[in-house]
Image (cartoon, rainbow, N blue to C red; front, side, top):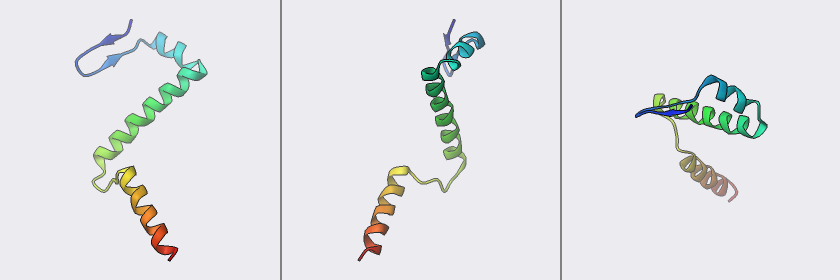
Length: 67
């Protein structure tokens, strides 16, 4: 049984193993894991740049270099 607590959701290992074997759910779970790793990296890195900010700067540099 999945339990939802104040600060976490607990998924039984048996359920996790069943879901991770399914290609669709495996991809979804991997995205979830990757997003947690990214959030942790962003919290630890003071120089981390927002992707939208990076993309905007990249476009500006690309446009100015083509002049």
